[in-house]
Image (cartoon, rainbow, N blue to C red; front, side, top):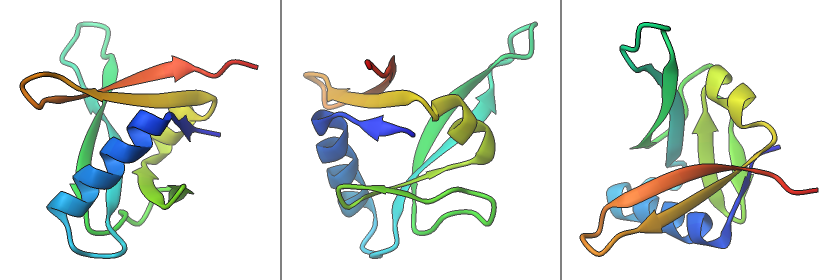
Length: 99
């Protein structure tokens, strides 16, 4: 099951609360095509007021995530980390879970 670092939890919670005043809002994680010749995909995020019909709903420490099916499968055994750089840009990293 996907877990979040403390940094990711704080950043996602702040991001969602600043972009939506809906109690059901969360961070949607979905795959998007890269345009690479191999047809690879990468994950993207967007704050949304509610999940899409086929999204999973994951709540961790009050933080709501809405991974689409493909993203949920890719993140099932991962840790989501996040950081903010000096310019205020948010970046996410997907890490392996340690046993």
